Length: 279
Image (cartoon, rainbow, N blue to C red; front, side):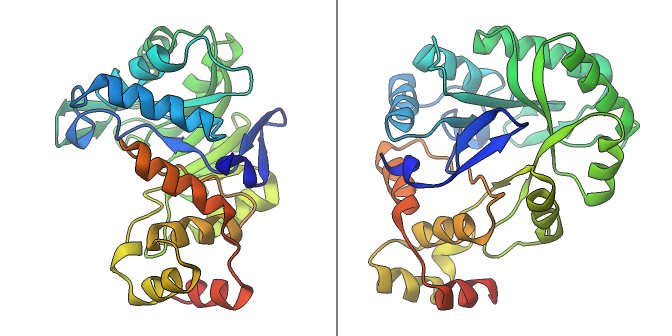
């Protein structure tokens, strides 16, 4: 199927992911708040993702909150042996437009144990700190994840919304297997981290991977050349740009999901990759 046409990436030395994943933020209500308009449709999208060869699903306790994780369990449990579920903790939700980090060790433990229940698992494959909390020493948060790992509640540790210094500091405390930062055609501020992930065998998980694609004339021209959508060009670029890339485009539509997965079959010419790199 489509997602299986990508190469794979090994996370933590043992989790083998097809390099086109699925981000489960959009299966909840607007702005990741509350229930989706139709829970049945949301679950059908999750099932279709797995049918298309997606075996890496990224979610978070704050999506809903908890609703994304519940829908994943309802749609896919008992999980296929090859399915990798990544989630995140340490983010408060007070309303649709209200997000705020909470990296206290007690909060991370609460979030992790909640995710175990909502996902219906005894161990989370990849657990990520959602965002460093400026009110909490960063390494206190990392130590909390390492403790949860030692207890067997999480298998591997990842970080999100971090810079290189934070990654380096965290590596002194625990093995870090992934970094999830914003990255797309119009925002490549994490380019250095992409390179570090490739060098050190970590996965780089770009969120908002499609941002800017539909608004750029050059991308539109290339989409016309390949007879695909600008969003598909954006995904094909990410997959070709670095072997560490594990894009997680999200959608609540089966049609859009299929279009995203079809990007795995697009083979961009090197000259066109250079054009996209220069944007």
